Length: 433
Image 1 (tube, rainbow, N blue to C red):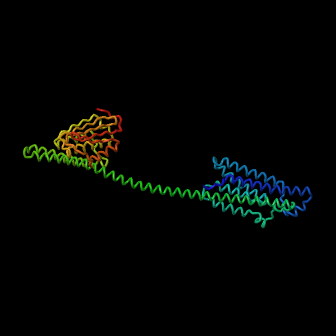
Image 2 (tube, rainbow, N blue to C red):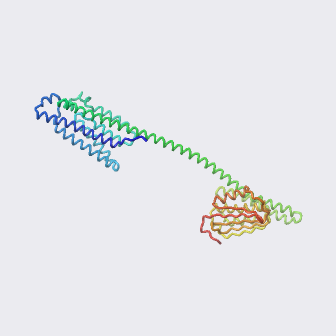
Image 3 (tube, helix red, strand yellow):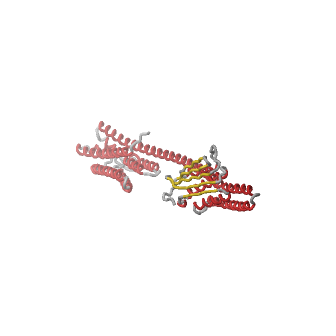
């Protein structure tokens, strides 16, 4: 990871350099004036500097006060910047005013505080105007240069005061003068480079986050498509189960009833005629069941109690197939949720169809009772059973219906065929009747 330059420390360094530079400059002017008066070299001083400030002492005192004011506004800004935004704005305006005063008091001999104030403004600006502020501030710094202004306006120069001292001292003074001035400019350039680097880093990070967000959106879109296809698959499966459960049940009853009519037609035409009437009723009921299933798919299904639906379905099957069906239920099925009731109804219906169609059963026992896990349902018949159970379309969907509700379903083929279902129920208040 790249090392980050501490912008706060850099601004402290710039503040110290500018305060030192201003005090150094005013102290040199004040000391030279005092030395000239004491040694009687005033004429020599006037010959060296050409133009002198009105009061070197006042210049020194004023510079000290302005530097203290700059330091106080900076400290105040640092202490309150995170809590009171208005203080930051006000102190920056105060710094701008103090800059103007320092520049005019020192006759443009120092303009370093412009760079320092500009660095503070850039630091506290949160918008994308940093580069504009940098450009305007740098232009202002160049326009406030002593060498440029002195061409049009007569100004005193601190560098002329250096010439009043002995040669060795002159060299030291010029060295300190240029080193401090150039260090201040170097700190400002370093500050700007670091700000630009951080800005670029922020832009790169935003671009990276945008790329991740775009990838996430693409993944969500793909997930939505997959989920939609899964929903379509589940809906097709649900339609298949509804058709199988309704149409299959009705057709099984009609098929068994017709076989019975064919068997007794010659021996007992009257009974065959009555059986055909029952079959006709079953066919009509099958049409009604299909319509009910369509309404159920449209969320407008049969609103009659579950117990009544099961009893009606079993009674019609018994009449159509001419078999014995015993149904016992010790629970209040009306207390169950719709999806639970639908699963129970379809399991009973499919089990009865299979018992008649595949097991050729003549007797079917259905028992629904309470269980420690919720509900226990056992459906057994006296049919022929099977040697090796293989799950078909109907039993597969029975298992799916029950497992979706967190239950289990088992199939046994011994002395007929038995279906055993254990299923949890959401309504804990459901009690035995």
